[in-house]
Image (cartoon, rainbow, N blue to C red; front, side, top):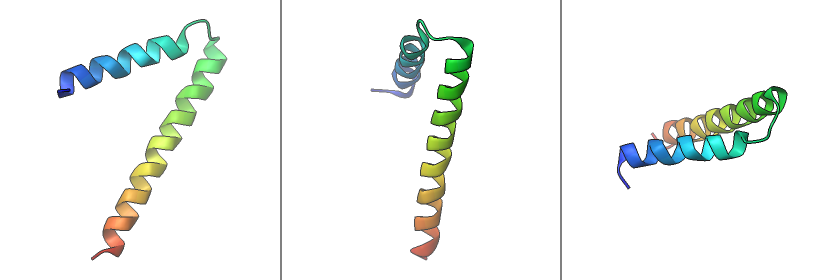
Length: 52
């Protein structure tokens, strides 16, 4: 899978998840996935720093 295919997959997944959800539900899901991504990035950065 190349980067364009990956972006298309993510967009399609977001549309599928958002289907039949209220704006409030979508906002909660968006903040959930944002925090999940940020936490994963923090873990990776912390682990990389500790390996030095």
